[in-house]
Length: 237
Image 1 (cartoon, rainbow, N blue to C red):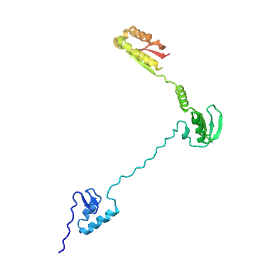
Image 2 (cartoon, rainbow, N blue to C red; image 1 turned 180 degrees about the horizontal axis):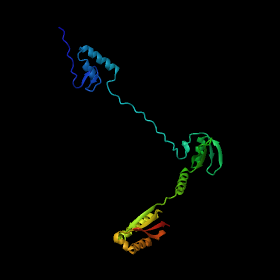
Image 3 (tube, rainbow, N blue to C red; image 1 turned 30 degrees about the horizontal axis):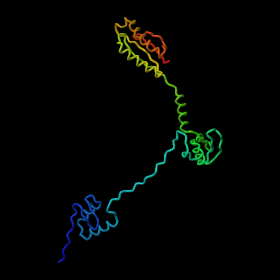
């Protein structure tokens, strides 16, 4: 009588014909569906699957590319950033050197210790000049900063006729900071209730503040009373 071979258990991890099976193996679901077949059938299936597929996961290789520095489209191109060849070259002294390959122009610039700067990219060929690019950028930024005009703003400090000396000194420091930033300052004295009957007290506070601001500012409009306020504008010198 022929003995029937026992089927190996699939629990845990079982090595069959060189194939390691785990509960997460991609063949686990298929083995469940083949449970009803005889031993030779599913052994043959495992052998064919082992030959046609890799049994271990392979970490994919990562391609690394060297990053090429991007060209600044806002600023001028310099040296190797100039892609067009040939170019028309102007020397550091302003002399015309004529049209030459870009590589040769860069070499001439570096021999002098300068950079080759593309000053007219729309021309054909482009016009480049040998210069100190760092100094060129500094002077260009300095001109653009000088061209921007400061927009004067109107700041305000408020006090009361009975404001204490410490608070007045603090308000004066604020006004001095505003004037140093080239902003105008409006000094306002507020009156409430019975304080309207003592306008002179508010005028004393106003004159005290103005006397401290005249060193760095000038009175643009004299103190005037409007409703419950006394106002005066001080402009920077």
